[in-house]
Amino acid sequence: MNSDDNALSEIRKGLALLYEKGDIVELRAFHQTHLDYPTTISGFFDDLDKLALAIQDVNSHTQKNGKKTRITVYTTLNPVKKTWQTVNNKVYWGSKQLRAEITGLGIPLSASPRMKSSTNFNTQATYYKMRTTSDGESDILARRWILLDIDAGQSADTNSSGAEKENAFNMATAIVGDLQERGFPPMALCDSGNGWHVLLRVNLPNTAEVTDIVRRFLNALAMKFGGKHGSAHLDVKVGNAGRITKAYGSMVYKGDDTPERPCRRSKVIETASKPATLEQVAAVADEFAPPSKLQSFTEAIDQPELKTQIEKVLAYLDHNDIEYKDAIVADSMVKIPVTCPNECEHTTDGIESSTIVTVSKSGAFGFNCQHAHCADLCGWRNFRRRLDRKFSMLHADEPPFQWSPQAYLSSDTQNDEEPKPEVEPFVQPSIIVPARKKTLHEKAVALLDELLPVAGSRCLLQTVFKEAAAKGISKRSIQRAYKRMSLLPVNDDVGAWLVRQEPNEEIQGMLEGGELR
Image (cartoon, rainbow, N blue to C red; front, side, top):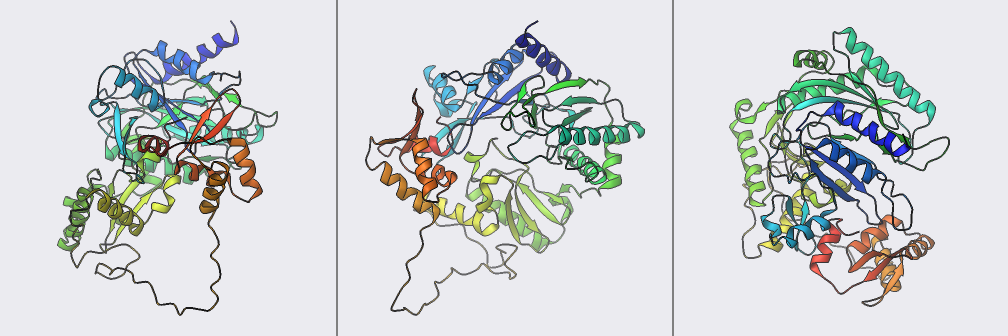
């Protein structure tokens, strides 16, 4: 048996552990190109043999120049419910390929349930990208597994060392031992490449109540075992139903392959089939982490003023076409899961538990998105500023949303009135006005204008980055700048180029969504 056969055998072993015949599974991977955001690779399968071959194909993909693409492959941890998906046992390398197939069949993109429309915030152009599995009850059939992901704790974008991975194994062993002493059934153990996965078999519905218990379960174990095994830690953010996990049996690429920190193959070490009960999971969750007061706000809140605040913010979301789920009471505030205005920069579609609008007991509004690209959007002021600006651009003839005088604006506004528009303070003019320093973005735009002055100009991306480094401009600033300009990254046998094009709303929208590669 050659190495490819061995790899395929390990992949099939991983699929046999997680899924049953007829299950619908999404394959997902992220191709990190020279764009700021990776291209999403996705496909839905109900044939595990074809899925195994697709995992191996993506994982071992080779570029035209013979270099390995080094793509880590994932699959959905829990079975997918068939609703909008196109289950055709085929992988699509980015939305561009899927769009071409749909339009080639004569189907409008707007009519395809596999596509999701988005709007380029800068140009207001509409473009379409493929949908991927979300956490909602409509996408995940049931919870079959709870993932305990023990990370080795190595630096970002590097593989773990042997010692770091051993610490993670010791932590996994300690957690398994503790749970089995409590009467839990045997658990599956998988090598995740850089750490270890403990998989607890369950048969649970995909509901908000179960999600709350699973998250507290993970936090409870992290609280008990954290800090006892070097840098190893339990990832508490993997409790969502739509979680993707490593395609066991495939290679994992996180950093450079070195003798001290090698790239490794993930694989199944021990299997498990007997499920734990909800009562067992809840007992651990309740013992170490107090349960959240998870209930409908209509049942939980009896103060008319606070209920009015919630209804007001929901009306504001409706006014701006922001999708949201039912509001819930969790601990000291009301949380409303919403679609992020910056959704085109997420790697998942739709409403996510990591993106929420909040209403505190005092009635103050808040907004938070945990995605790294949305740091500048967090906070109610920033969220509202984005939505109000977008509304005024799309609906110039319509009045803005009417806030009542009693509406609270944000948690950092301690009064109960809508703040008046800020007035620029008067500044006494001076005789000598010091020149304002250019921002990194302005410097990046100026450099790109210098290197690519007219339509048709082209420059090797490597040269651009070299010139930028000489001027103290980061690679990220260059990437952000060319995405907002009429610059298109293209590849040929020589390498990666930037090409200046005539402004084009469709291309600009696709670039903004990270769809061109």
